[in-house]
Structures are given as structure tokens and as C-alpha cells.
Length: 153
Image (cartoon, rainbow, N blue to C red; front, side, top):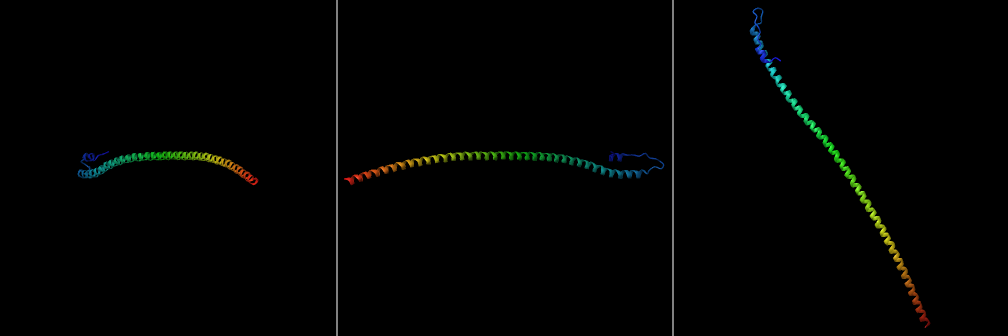
């Protein structure tokens, strides 16, 4: 690429006949040098700006990648937490069912024992009642015998 310095230092050979006017060529080259210098500096500035923007773009791409990885890890962690929570909930329900079944068995056993105790008490009451009835009958017989003896005497 031609630099502004190349334009400024460019010299043309002078021809005596039908040549260009040296002053006009020099003035034109001076104007061209000014414009070209301006454009050259702008191009360099723009290249620097493009480089800077590319670096920023790379930086933001890295941040985006990091954020995507973080998001994926967070989603995976959330799924793991849900899975563990479900497992714990299932275990708690299972343990509660087991405890409830055990308690129900204990209550069933207690009911059976209480029924047996009740039956035993009923039997004892029936035996007691029969003994009392027998005692009362025998006492009544004694009284009748005493009354017969009093009537015969």
C-alpha cells in the first residue's frame, strides 16, 4: 500500500516540451497527500477499532460460553436436587406407611388381647355367677330345712 510519505516524496522527471506544469503537479500532489494522509489515518484508526471490537467480541463470546456452561450446570444441579427430593419424599412416604402398618398390627394385637381379657372376665363372671347362684340355692334350701324343722317342732 502506498503511504502518504510515498506520495509526498514522489518526483516526476521533467520534460522540456509538452511536459506537465511542475507547480500544478506539485500542488496536486500536495492536495493528494493531505487527503490521502487523512484517509490513511482513518483507515489505521478503523483497523485499530476493528481489532479492539474483535477483542471485545472474543471477550463477550467467552463470557457467553461461561454463562451457558453455568446455566447448564445449574439446570443439571436443579434436576439432581429434584431427583434427590423425590427420592427422599418416596422414602419418607414408605417409612410412614411402614410405621402406620406396624402401628396397625400393634393395635390389632392389642385388640385381640383385650378381647381375650374380656372373654376371660366374662367366663370368670359366669363362673362367679354360677357359684353365687349355687350358694344362694343351697342357702335357700337350708332356710327351707330350718323352716320345716320349726314347723315340725
